[in-house]
Structure formats: structure tokens, C-alpha cells
Length: 137
Image (cartoon, rainbow, N blue to C red; front, side, top):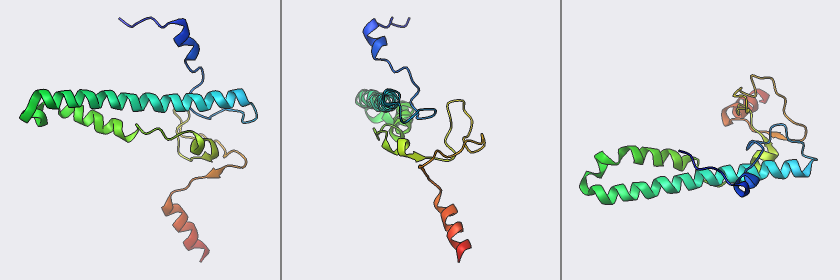
């Protein structure tokens, strides 16, 4: 049974998704809310990785020499959580448009026909940049 959420918890809970999609950069409260949501989401992933790590340590101590067999699922879960557990901040996502990134609806932004916002830099893969450079020569 889930624990009921208190009024104080609900007041601090982000009301916006952790992306900059649809954010008006001239509207400061909206921009700060998106930045706050992104940072909170990254901290949640970091804390989840910490909890899995603690459980993995307990399993290693309890199982002793059998830890390779008994703790395999926790080890795999921890390795997957490590990939996304760093708190990176919001500036890169805020200042750069990344083609191929998923929008909240689950569509690929490139295939959905979304345009790059004005004044923002597109990140392109190295092999595409190399092909463009070779075409110029």
C-alpha cells in the first residue's frame, strides 16, 4: 500500500516534465521550473543507484563466496543504474538541440519534423561531420 503524500511534499513536487520541450526561454519562472525538474530527476536517478549499491554490498557480505551466483541480478541492475546516475546539470540540454532525442510523446524529433530552435547549435555525429568535410574537398 503506497504511503499518502503530504501537502508539503506535493507542494515541492515538480509540475513540469524534466525537459525543455515547449519552454519559453523568456518566461523566467517556466524556465526555472524546467531546470529544477531536470536537476531533481537526475538526483532521483543518482539516489536510486546508491540504494541499489547498498543492497548489492549487503548481498556480497551475506552470500560470501557465492555472491557471483546469488547477487547477479543486483549487480546487473547496479551497472545499468550507473550509466545514468551522474548529476550532469541542465546547461547542455538547455543550450543545445540534440537531433534524434525523444520528445515527451515518444516520437523521434527528427522524424516528427520538429525544427531546430533559433540560435541553438545542432549536435551531429562524428561520422556525419566527416562525410560533410570530405564532400567539401
